Length: 470
Image (cartoon, rainbow, N blue to C red):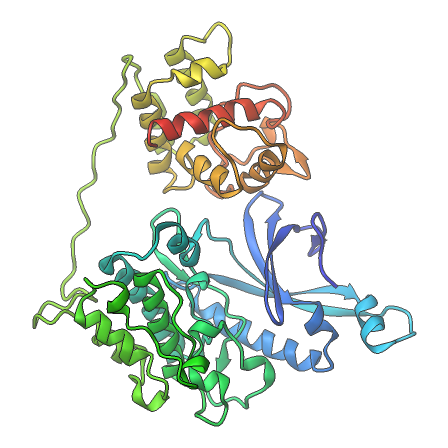
């Protein structure tokens, strides 16, 4: 049984939007609640539901979910809110696999409710940028290392650390560890569903159960392999291939200016035999410390005061006054701020008598004014709203500035919450920070449903944002 788009769970509280991913035993969905907020739910997939070990798999799943709830305040671990269950009916999966002839029977399927993170995973980030600067890569590795340390203190292993399971929050570029489908307690009896993970990041003991029981050193290997991939932009040779004499290419051969300190830490963390690796994540992170005594690179030895708040940039090429817009945003009056945004943009473009912007006026819209409006929205929503946020989402769903595609426009509407089965009316928008990322502003100057005439403005605006480097 797999839930379809539009299906409602928990007596209508959550609506399925789309499938985010599938694994060996799990499936992850994006959902929206009655207030328009987005969440992620994860449950066992059809293959797991059809397994003869379903009861055990679901019990393991529930136990892990309950333990992961305790980390919801950790800044670098995806927040797991609660464990829920939904009544479903056995469908043709059972009949197809086991030739059951009895009528469908109902049962309860457990799922976990988690936060939906606006951002990009490190694998996609590296694919786009190539190998990362050493300092940037170390920042993400330290954050993930802190997450793993917290898990290990509670005797939980992740077992699937890799760049695609690390998401950078769009609001602050902080790394967040996700996808705990393979997390298992220390010392648990090994079973087929625990010997898994992505080949390039799996420790040798995950391939060969006779090598050693899994331990913290298992996640050390994956974290070191992840650092290898971040700084080189390449996949490391898998432990299984290395065990049959396929060598690991040293990272300094790919990145000659990589520091010896980082190079040696990667090699040590990726030792084939677990007894030759650092036995804990914290021990491995110490290898990444600065060689200068008293000045470790990570973590900092003394608190660094936050930078003084910078005054708002209210500059305008045409002398527009943006104080009112700033004050509305600072007060969290999102609807009033959205309406004010439309007013000032019409005034800047000299289109007040028309009541809407055409493509020509958008092409000529002053970059400085567009940048001021966007920066105000981004600042006071903590990176949740703004034209630059919308542009990023537009590009992520396949948008090309200046080009129109109904498929892309519908995907964009789904992502930013302007569509819930159909385009919604302006009055039905969520004027709250709980709205999906990119939900505001909507100065589309249309009547009725927000999406029907908005694509012309959105496509042209995306092109102008690119031209203005916003």
